[in-house]
Length: 451
Image (cartoon, rainbow, N blue to C red; front, side, top):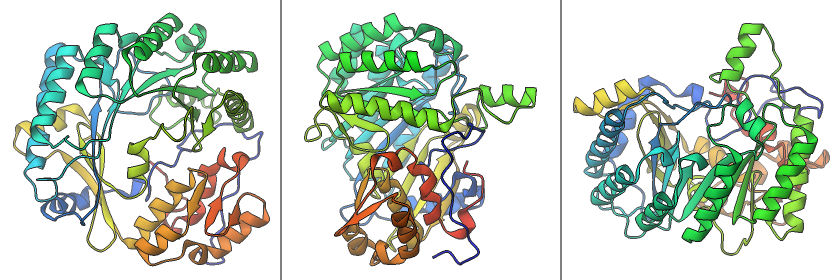
């Protein structure tokens, strides 16, 4: 519980300009607190068994792209040859081989698999088949409930989509971001609107269980008129799921580099109020079209059928094995806490470590039971509804009592409500939920750089 000298975060005013830094809270504690000092402890976790019943997921990072978007802050490469890509895939499979033989992983069945990037669909059908088959030889996919795969529309073809379907992909996510060619070009996206239409039609015809469309509210050059056109196009397409993010400008982006060179503190994108209004308009149109909003970022056509197992499992404390350069993983421990870890953040030290017979883990952070509870609490708040009961059962702590002062303040400000055992986050608060989450952080984790 924070003391009286620890101020709670204040929600940004609707006219607040977008400044540099991470807004989106995707984990806890902040990434900046992870350290190479804990690498050995991170590796040692693989010599311990998981608690019975803990789900196991797999994240595979494919860091290759045709172009680097101006807003991208992930580890990506646009200059690698076919041979270099093949060498990378070999390293990923060798990494999988070693982890598959550890006490933590051996004999366990995967619940979900997620291929992220970069651009996983950058790979050819031959490379995809080699990677999938190799992973299935090393890890048990017999009970996988979801295989999620990120795509850039311009890298897709009917043959590649058929290949992905045959390989077992169930959730295909199209990183469209915007339907306007001028805005796509201004943000240095590789694809164009014609490729979007083709890729979507091909994906639907291929029969994937779930096709998700990603959009970003507030890209460089966005206008009210164009955003409404995006909404109209989206509703007409009727994808199974829609994910909408509000544009942020992390430090390692081209936008920030340009800001730094020009001495500007404000990013050349819409203010927070405008971005929230655009997302509100999109969700309202989607709801009118029969969608359900299921998180701060997601709407689905059929909430009883369309699930996002990767997100829900990870936010509830599942183990996740991470493979590939710069990828993040998480392991639970027997005391209710866990271990965050991340691989080498550049491709040369990553592949060198694997080829040299070492594990490519770069940094880690052990977390105690309280921090594990905070992590699950702040992530699940993004779903718009969270029950106290699972936290009492799992951690032996009532979150409504632990954070009574914080919750009372948010209730008094009409930001949340509590109905019986459930905390409800209304739509307008959900649009800015990331700002509220820092209040639940330990005092030492507030005010530090997030990533």
